[in-house]
Length: 145
Image (cartoon, rainbow, N blue to C red; front, top):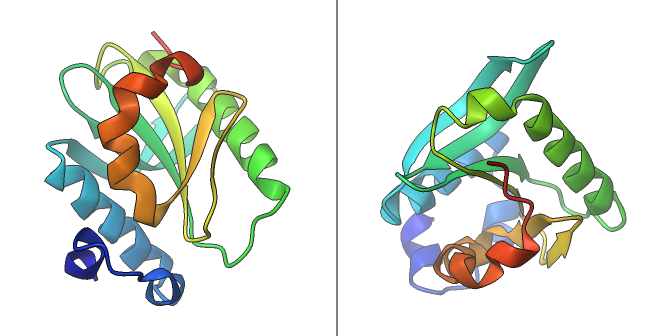
């Protein structure tokens, strides 16, 4: 699946049929291919337990990922983005142990690509493009420092 996605093939239907663990594993492979260290299913105690699907980091930035393998999302993406950023803000100090800054990212199996309240909501097929465009998007993303 990862090779097909990497080669640019349209894998939307195949991605939607993945189990959530396989969806997150595919994301882990993408981030690793771009040189990030990756931790999956991270649980942090920040005034209560907060779970993060993936944290991908390098020496400059930790990208904190909320993975949603939904067939549709519609207006719910705004709420998912808001809650993800709120959870990150609660855990800011612990997330900054990974890198000097942390950025939110919601990755979905739907054909959705936008920024909601500083949180990018990106289709899994566009994660690579998002990572290569990150420098150009930083002023639009809620980066915690």
